[in-house]
Length: 219
Image (cartoon, rainbow, N blue to C red; front, side, top):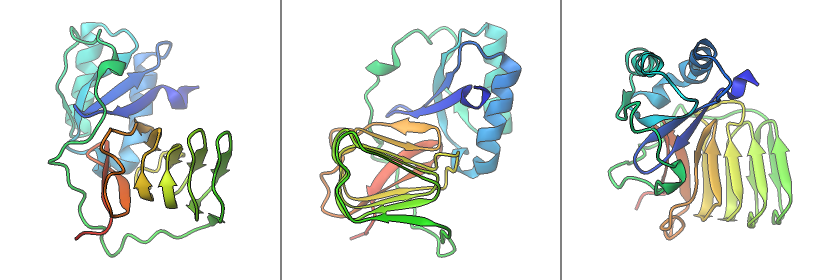
């Protein structure tokens, strides 16, 4: 499907842009615009490590690089000659210098919410058009997919996807973050080793095109 022509994947080094092999360049550029333009402020200043997936000619690579840098304010740090390493070899994590700013007072989310007072167990999928609040844990093998934000009043060890329709302003909050995977919009990251060690609840948000996790309650 053309809406999946582009997927963003966050790593410690920066953001990878995964391009679907069978899509032509015009479709990819159009898909980039649909995903980035509505949430441009969440991507400005992001570092693009490289493009993965589709084999690009040097001309195609240069054209995509120009689009990312000139139209969307990102920086592409890789080249078309170093696209052959395996993305799985990249260590996932967060940069110590990245700090999430305090939520602005006007950042109020309205709409429908699903409230679940139970533990979400392995094999269960919770899919909802709106925000999801879980009063309990999300066990390994469980999956929550919401078009809005996700709040877990417990421990997270499964897969959490917020902003499933491409809302990069969505966020994920949990008492303790130890997820198999976090996803906001099309940006994906898995849990680094240190995640979940903090005493405070944590929040995951998109900042400069990457998912950043920080304490929700500042000391």
